Amino acid sequence: MTKYIFVTGGVSSSLGKGIISASLAKLLQARGFSVTIQKFDPYINVDPGTLNPYEHGECYVTDDGAETDLDLGHYERFLNVPTSQANNVTTGRIYQTVINKERAGDYLGKTVQIVPHVTDEIKRRFCLLGKTKDYEIIISEIGGTVGDIESLPYVEAMRQMRWELGATNCMVIHLTFIPYLNAAKELKTKPTQHSVKTLLSYGVQPDILVCRTEHPLRLSIRKKLALFCNVDLESVIEAMDADTIYDVPLLMLKEKLDITVLKKFQLDSKQEPDLTEWKTFLGKLKNPLREVSIALVGKYNELPDAYKSIHESFVHAGAVNECKVNVEAIHSEQITHENVRELLKNMDGVLIAPGFGERGIEGKIIAIRYVREQKIPFFGICLGMQCAVVEFARNVLQLDDAASIEVDSLTPYPVINMMEEQKNITQIGGTMRLGAYECELEPDSHAQQAYGSKTIYERHRHRYEFNDHYKKQFSAEGLVATGINPKTGLVEIIELKDHPWFVGVQFHPELKSTVENPHPLFVHFLKAIMAIGSE
Image 1 (cartoon, rainbow, N blue to C red):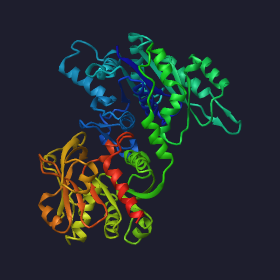
Image 2 (cartoon, one colour; image 1 turned 90 degrees about the vertical axis):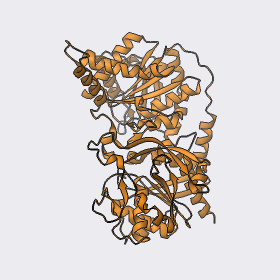
Image 3 (cartoon, rainbow, N blue to C red; image 1 turned 180 degrees about the vertical axis):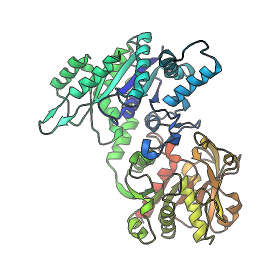
Image 4 (tube, helix red, strand yellow; image 1 turned 30 degrees about the vertical axis):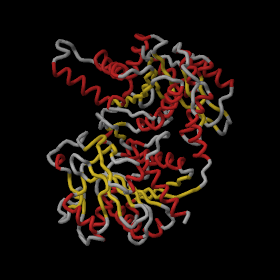
């Protein structure tokens, strides 16, 4: 029978439920169990696709085209297993399903209520992955904090699941915060006690407490938490702040979180956990031989989570190259012709970030011109690639008013055009070109050398494309299409000849980089930077 673990949060948001969930899953996976993780978000949006990155961080996209929470990125990066539409569920999706059923007459004669109809749909989603694939353990992360109005139906559904399946098949891990009062030189357990009391008032007893803390938990503190929160002493788990999120699985291994879980589930470990590759990765990450600085030019830099996958991709690629990557955030709105040299002169490479809309576009174009002319390695992702096309059209092809029609619908030179199938779409949510698509690479291109294969599949999230009418003009001047979708002819990758490394991609390579499989484009981008530095 599939075992279910629910991870809830208390006291404060942003404690790292996703990292704890992914770390536990990694340890269970290393012990030979088939594991998956899913995220349940309490907001009423159907998916994060219409949310501003300032609101919710980046929107993560899966192979099957789901726009999901960024925590799914952590799941994939830790487990090295792709997620899907079923791994992220929102209240909006739950209510949409229930209302559609009501309209179809499925509840005919019934008054539709939170309990049992909404909670039944939540429980169905809890179990869906276990019925479609053969998972032994499913970890469900419940977004938000216990006590939020939005999360109440999920807590009730959890309570029902625990009652229906029993303690050996279903457990609750509660992640909480132990604040340290500097004036009193003391860790305080009262906020955690109140958080657990709130959970108990809903009929849910946590089985394990994972305690985020800046200071070690003394035995007396652990005993106090165990006594007042009604858990075993061994079920009070210390989660100290770590240098990197990739330390957390080893910290949880030291705390025996996985052993405690298996004991409560009455399961025997299939093998001793083999984390050799993980430890090798951490060793290289913490002991770099080189150091480079890369400018991340974007317009959401105030919130690092807006470009979370890009930051993590540089961590993975840096470890492979035994190189520390200092990512310098530069706001594209602050870049002008007068200050671009000062902002970028000390950068070893420049990445132009993805995004939407007109704001910050001109700053990105100015930055691209500088790195193109100064022969600085360049990597453009999605909108970053499109900006590179516009910059080349204006300054090399002399098409002065060239633009993307997203920015200027009246431009005489629409070098970036709306995709044909997007032109009659009126709804915003979930209607872009989403998910994994095939791409064929030109021999001996930077992309082909990086991937080491002719055909690749990468994840997309966009409405606009390179305008094929201008392809010959660009190619004649040295900006060539080196990646093409074989079915549609869409240009997926552009590269500049006579430049150390100038690559723009329409897709999002950062979404497929993991600890065990760093993305080849990020790896080779760093290799190109390091090669220049060693000359």
